[in-house]
Amino acid sequence: MDTKKRGPLIVFLSSLLWAGDTPFREPLLLGGLSVPFVGFLEHLLNSLVSMPGLLAKRAGFKNLTLKQWAGLLYIGAGASALGALLYVQAAVAMNYNFTIAALLQKLQPIFAISLAVIFLKEKLSPRFWLFAVPALLGAYLVTFGWANPAGLWSSGGHLHLFGPALAVGAAILWAGGTVVGRSLMSNIDVQLVNGMRFVFGLIFLTVYVVIGYHFQFGQMTPLFWRNVIIIALVTGFFSLWLYYYGLRHTKASVATLMELGYPLALTVVNWKFLGITLNAWQIVGALVLLASVTALVLTGGSFNSPVLENEKAI
Image 1 (cartoon, helix red, strand yellow):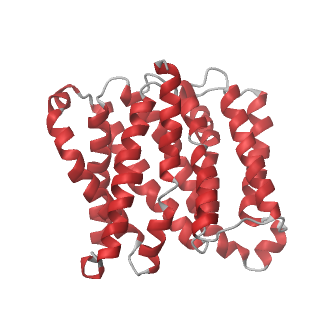
Image 2: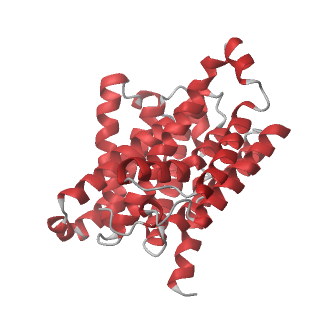
């Protein structure tokens, strides 16, 4: 299999590994551990495992530009740490429904193209709205079913908008993460990118826990440590190493499409192991959302979009 075909397949396989996260993460949160502390433990373990690779490739640090350092900081503190916090907290706010949170984060191609219009002054093609509007409708159905917006608000439903809003925030951060990561991979070794993602994420989460929460090492049981190790090393370090290796040989637009394997696999995993199901309208919304985003990515979404095809953004 040639490199152009192997790269997207590896990205797809890595997205399937991410789906194994939820059955091990939920018991930690239900057991009293905070979302930031679990994220801190993940990044701590991943940073330790990444150290041999970072030391072996340390000569590459001297060649990094200021923009590349900023890119590493973004994918570490932003896409990895803050994005994960928003995503998990979104699921918790929606009664631990990781399925809906995962489906909502697949709006990220729409945000990626929209950010290109705002910051890069691109002009959208008509087909962007052809797929964006159904995708937004699908996202609404996934979240609220067929509930009337006015009735939802008047009945106090606005209090439940917090979870979906957090999931959308994660989608925005991850939209930039794929693009920045792909840009970095063109000039920086995968071990440096993957390792610094965890190191910068660890620094961010350490400060976050110290300021707003507290360390909960006293509550860690052998079962909790086992789950954290699985989350960190299998669905974290190994899957991200695969992801960045595949991303080196995959365009950002194709990678975004391959990442659709994650919500699809997660829906099955959550149904099988956690009993999380979707009602009929939510299933329809999920199909509309995934189909619209897939079509958007396949058609490019905008004319010569550097956000989706970017090779030299950093």
